[in-house]
Length: 501
Ligand code: CS2
Image: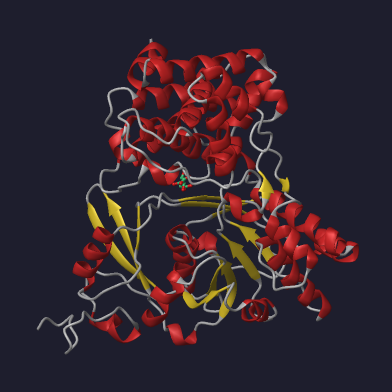
C-alpha cells in the first residue's frame, strides 16, 4: 500500500492534516490557518478566482494580513463546495510553465457556500462586520446586463423574480442589493464591491447595474448605494483553463494524495486595482498587485489585446478544428492574423500608459498564448460570445468607424463568430454553442442558413450585441459580410490567405 492510500485502498485526500506530509516541492500556506479570520466574501468559485484573487490574498495573509480570509459562495452549483469541503477548503494550484510544473496548495478560502442552497447563510456573512469586501467572478453574463450597453437587463427572468421579492435573491445584483440593504438597516458601513470579471470599466458597470436594481426596489436604497458604496475598477489577468481529469492525475502525483478539484494556471499574473476601499483591504500591493488611481487604460489594453485575440482565435480555431490556443499559435496563418489584429485594429485604439509599450505587451501575450503546457481549449473561450464581443472587439470597431476607418481584422473575427453560430466545423464535426442568447442565435441560423448577407443581417439586428451605430456603417458591415461569405464558400485557410495578402 502506498503512503497516499487509506486502508480501504482509496487514495487519501488533501486536507489540513496532510499539509505537513506533502513533498518539499509543494508550496503550502506559510501561516496558521486557524488564526485567519474572514474579511472577504467572494461570489463565484470557478477556476479563475482560485488562480488569482485567492493567490494574491494567500500571499497577503502569509505576509501578515490574517484578517482577510475568504468566504466563498457559488451562485450556481454545489460542485466546487462539495469538492473543497472535505479538503478543509484547501486546493492545489498547478502553475504550468514551459519549464515545468510548480504545485502550490492555497489556504485563503476558509469556507465554501452554495447560494441557491443557503441564501440566508450567505446574507448573514454579508452582515458580518469583519467582512469588508465582496469580490465577484461570475463571468460577464452573471451581472444580468445588456452586453452592448452595460445597463441592467430589466427583463432578465432572474431580475424580474428578484424585483418581485417573493423568494431569496437569485441574481447577483439581487443578492448584492439585499446584502447592502441589510447592512444599511443594521446601521453598518457598506462593504466594498470588487468586480473581478472582464467587463469594461467593471466597477463602474457593476455600480450602474446594482444601483439601478436598488432604485427599482426602493429609491432610498438606490441613493444609499449610489452615495455610499465603493465599486473600485480592476484589471485581472491570469490564463486559467478549465481543469481536466489529466490535471487531477498530475496533481495527485505531485502531492501524493488526491485533490478533487485543483486549478491549473500559467506563471504570469497581473492585477491592477483602483485604490478605493473605505473599510480597508489586504496589502495586495506588497504581493505583486498594482494599486492605482485609474485602471481604465490597463483594462482596455488587456480586454482588447488579450481577450480580443482570444476571442478571435477561439472562433477561427473552433471552426477550423483547432483544439487549443497553443495549437492555434502553431498554425501557419493564425499568429499572423492575431499580430495584424493587434497592430492594425487594436493597439491604435489604446489609451497610453506611461512606461508600458503595447508592442512589448502583445509580444509577451504571444509567448503566453504559445505556452504548450496549458491546454486552453478554443471551445471553452468560445462560450458567451454575445457577452464577450462588445467589450473585447466591438467597442474598438466603433472607435474606428467613427474615425472613418474599417477595422478589417475585427470584421474577420466577427465573421468567424457568425460562422461559428452554425455549430459545425469545416470538417463537419458538430459542437454546441454555449451562450445566454443561444436560442436567438439558433433562430438566426435557422432563418438565414448559409447565406452570408442574410446571416450577418439577422445577427447584426441583435442590439444586445451590436450597437446600431456600428452596423449602420457600410464599410464595417460590408467587410463582415465579405469575410463571412469567404469563410462559408472558400473556408478558413483561403480566407486568411486572402486577408494576409
Ligand atoms: C478568456 C479569459 O475564456 C475567455 O474568454 O479570454 O478567460 C482569459 O483567459 C482571461 O481573461 C485571462 O486573464
